[in-house]
Amino acid sequence: MNSANPTLSVRELAKHYGEMTVFANVSLDVAPGEFVAIVGESGVGKSTLLNCMAGLDTWDQGSVVLDGNDLGTLDDDARALLRRRQVGFVFQAFHVLPHLDVAQNVALPLMLLREPDDGRVEQMLAAVGLQGLGARLPQQLSGGQLQRVAIARALIHRPALLLADEPTGNLDPGTALKVMDVLVSQTREHGASLVLVTHSEAAAARADRVLLLTSEGVAPR
Image 1 (cartoon, one colour):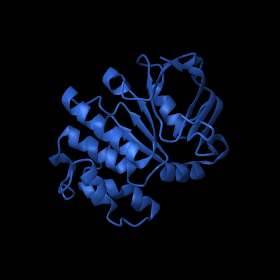
Image 2 (cartoon, helix red, strand yellow):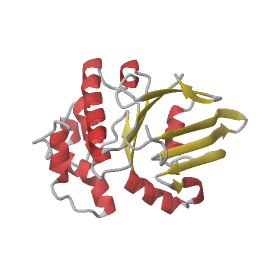
Image 3 (cartoon, one colour):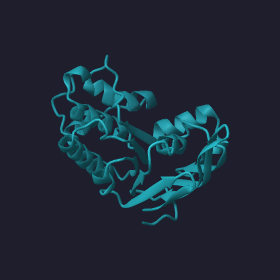
Image 4 (cartoon, one colour):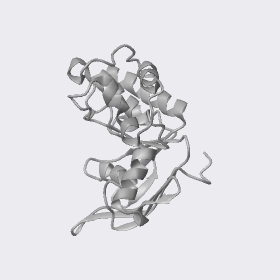
């Protein structure tokens, strides 16, 4: 992968809670279109690291540069705007809004950016295998379908970086495989970089690189 102009560049990142070090000396680059999986023991700070990459959480040392923007130099509003434009999220718990139908959930990033739909919502629903289900409410869908809604929503605004936090953790193995197929194929199709935090060996095996996170940093596994 050409990392001359990485989508994401993390240097010497450290996070502490009081006297406890969550992680330290974390440095990594994610190239445009690259899929990186991060694994590690429970409690080592994988989700916290993902939140730092998006500027959702603070850190105590080091730097995070997203799409050429040093997050540490931006105020909260500027970080939020950059995140809204350049980042998509997929979470273990789906985080779809129950009072909005499927199409409205997928369209949320476009609404926040005040961008026109131009048929993109229907195209994304078809791409993730949910064509014809746009008018359904989330409670009418299965777990696998809800995660596909989350993937469609995360990619609808064509972000540079997709962050996925245990996206198959609540799914049975068969459904998890199908969801990973959709996640990887759609990320590749949109040319986004993907950072996946996972305990699943099957999910990690799909990545271009697998990194092991410990309290002392990250290293190829």
